[in-house]
Amino acid sequence: MNGSWAHFESAEYAAALKVIEALKSNGHRAYLAGGCVRDLLLGEEPKDFDVATDARPEQISAYFRKTASVGAAFGVMLVRDFGQTIEVATFRSDGVYSDARRPDSIEYSSPKEDAQRRDFTINALFVDPLADDEAHQIIDFVGGQADVKARMLRAVGNPEDRLKEDHLRALRAVRFAARYGLEIEQGTKEAIRAHARALTGVSIERIGEEVRKMLLHPSRVRACVLIDELELDDAIFGNEQSFEPSVMKTLPESVAYPLALVALAIGRGFTIGDDAQTVCIGYRRALDLSNADRDGMRGIFECLEMLTNRWGAMSESERKRLANRDWAREALVILEAIEPARASAIRSQIEHLESRFGGLCPEPLISGADLIELGIAPGPAYKAILDAVYDEQLEGRIQTQPQAISFVEEQVSRQKTQ
Ligand code: ATP
Ligand code: MG
Image (cartoon, rainbow, N blue to C red; front, side, top):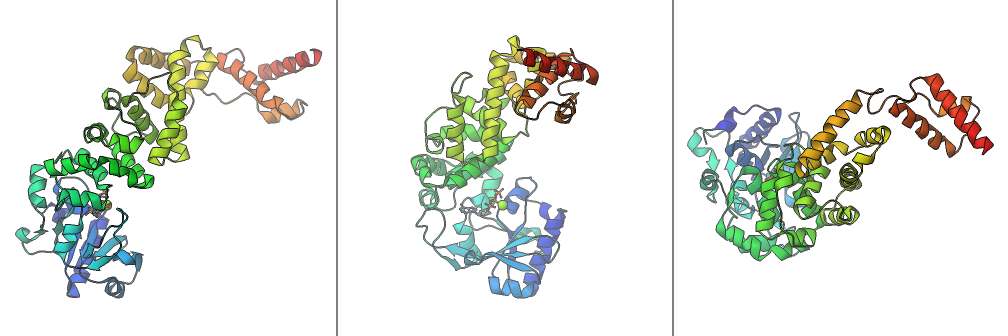
């Protein structure tokens, strides 16, 4: 709390300051609000700097040259005057949440009420970066500063009520607690557990987005443990299954999403040989995965199965093709955690293959164009011929283009005589 934001250097921060300055010069109150304040106080770099003000949307669009309204109904404007896009929201209190997702209506209100509509105390702080002295920089209506100090995640107001308004807050609690290493306050925890089932009423897009953020962050193990502890797994995945973290613990900090998903599935009981297809379909449905992420999961499971059960019996060309497949590297990361000895043997074999006959994926010696030149009628046989030649090349039995061509000619004449 030493005014660290005042020394913060980023183009976006500078733009947010200019927005605040302009609003103040027009007689308004204007603060940094929400996630950026939390990040700064907890020592993380903010993603974006949001401004909250008592100026109304129509006033904001009058004060700045380049504005757009994102959710005019929610009192949120974008200001683009200073080379960055700054979100400027009018202080508001939210009306009734009849669909447990969005308030039916909002009302412009005071900073205090605006703080009270927010989910957690650490998310409900304002900062006046232009205040004369540091003592007045932080505006705290909800005890957020004390919670930052105690590293505590606490619902603003009555946790039961706040959770019932929007059940997604249960997952937001998990995500923030994991990401910043916070304890969840007892009452907040109990409310989350008591209403865990109701998370099923939240759209899978919103649930999926939260889980994605959790799993992509290095704190993913803690997030998954918390989901387990708070008994949210049933509502998210459609089945109850305790989470065993040993595989996920071995992942590098930064991972492709499908890799984290596979580690999660394994932590939740999947073993090699189980039906991976069903798991991928289930996760896609539960988490609203993109086709690409689902295919990634499937790719990792397939590679994992082949590395585990078939690698030993594979020829050099088969091994090279597998090692070169999308997601094989991710599958090896998983295998490393499950069967380290097997994984390291495979890794050194792959290293060896990389040094043989042009490596794992040498440029093919011949192409479809060469087959046309050889007078072979284009058709479905092309792929089979080219695959056969490439296998020979990967095995080192064919090393030059003339060898490849005579191999093809031999094959074709053999087929003709059959
Ligand atoms: P991040 O962007 O890192 O996910 P954030 O706190 O900035 O975290 P946003 O979703 O960008 O999260 O929301 C900005 C602010 O709006 C939050 O800090 C919080 O004060 C408020 N807010 C967001 N979602 C909710 C919600 N579901 N219920 C109550 N307040 C919310
Ligand atoms: Mg944000």
